Amino acid sequence: MIDLIKCLKFIGSGVFLTLGLLAGAFLIGLALGCAFSIFRRTKIGGPLVSGVISVLRGTPVLLQLSIIYFTSASITGIRLSVLSAGIITFGINSAAYVSEIFRSGINSLPKGQFEACQTLEIPKYHMWKRVIFPQVLLNILPALVNEAVALMKETAIIGIIGGMDIMRSAQAVAAENYEYFLPLCIAGVYYYALVMIIEWIGRKIEKRHVYT
Image 1 (cartoon, rainbow, N blue to C red):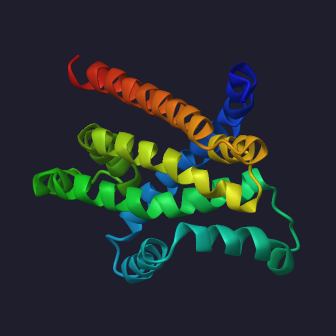
Image 2: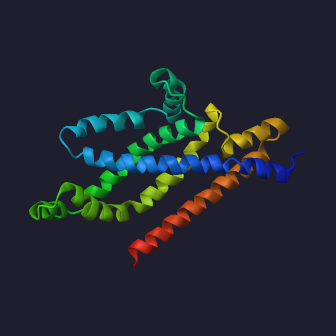
Image 3: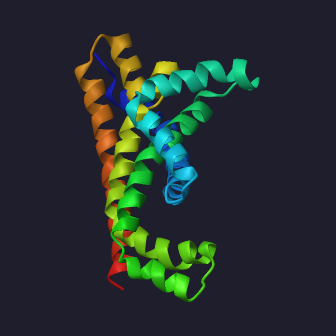
């Protein structure tokens, strides 16, 4: 018989790793995705970035995680921790999808926005920072929230390399007690609660910047 309180605490301890992976990976994905979307509009960087995105979207995240975690020491001489490997892998992978989100947001803007900036001779850096991206971010905010939710659930594969996140903690409890239904249900409740929090934050940001 599983001790429910002990089970809740043990599985709940995995929330910290899950949130750490989500926060780090989402920030990397947002920054890289933004950069990718800009470079794709250049003649030289466009084909290269498109190729990188194609590889990232066309190969399993588990494969990418395994390559980064198990080969980083032999290639770079640096042994990555489970958290570091997870953040890097999920961040780079998320960047491929965030880049597509940014691309659709940029393409949704009237071409006159870019033409006006060129006419006024606004430097490209300020054009992207002050004119284009503020509008794009408002348009793609719901899509970014969906990406954050998907990314959080995707981090569950960190258990493959030994990360004790929510899902791996639930599996450990299940294996120890030979009872799988309750631990997995508890893990599901934790994930659902985190999803609700992410969506609530997204709605608050959207209302603050769109309806004011």
